[in-house]
Amino acid sequence: MAKQFPEIDETQRKFIEEQHLFFVGTAAPDGRVNISPKGMDSLRVLGPNRIAWMNLTGSGNETAGHLLETDRMTLMWCSFTTRPLILRTYGTARTLHRGDAGWDELAELFPDHRSARQIYDLDVDLVQTSCGYAVPFMDYRSDRDTMQKWVDGKTDEQIKSYWVEKNQQTIDGKPTGTAS
Image 1 (spheres, rainbow, N blue to C red):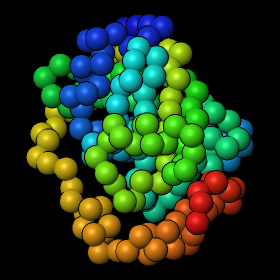
Image 2 (tube, rainbow, N blue to C red; image 1 turned 180 degrees about the horizontal axis):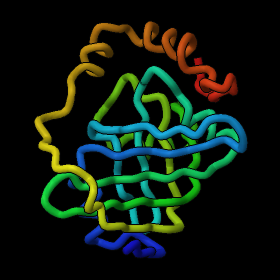
Image 3 (cartoon, rainbow, N blue to C red; image 1 turned 180 degrees about the vertical axis):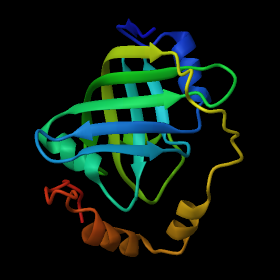
Image 4 (cartoon, one colour; image 1 turned 90 degrees about the vertical axis):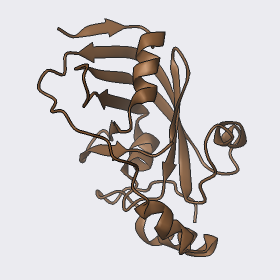
């Protein structure tokens, strides 16, 4: 049932852009594998082999730490509506922080988020689709506003302090490269 493609075609791009949720998977050479759900307006398909997503402040920062050791990344979307489908993109990613070359160009593609920690630039080398027949139907109501309310209640310095306290190491104790 699974089909593989060397790039994202227009039908797949449209499917990705219609989804409200995606998952990112990364792993260092050793330690725990991380799979995180992502939402909000934080992902852009930039071409048949390129995706960028803006990573916002969170309770952990595993992706950043993993990419310091190995640049592998998988993104996954699944349909919870009428058309059953799971789509994965596999590739290698680079991490950009504020002040890095390329940050401003990519940041302009997203709404302004004071809590943006990184932008990940994924070079896609394989796309795989599968049936998704066992994925349940679920209705989308809206994005949560919890993150934005938290950010609105903090100064820029308080957000940076949170990064120092919560986002400097992975759960395996490895550095994430997040600037303080």
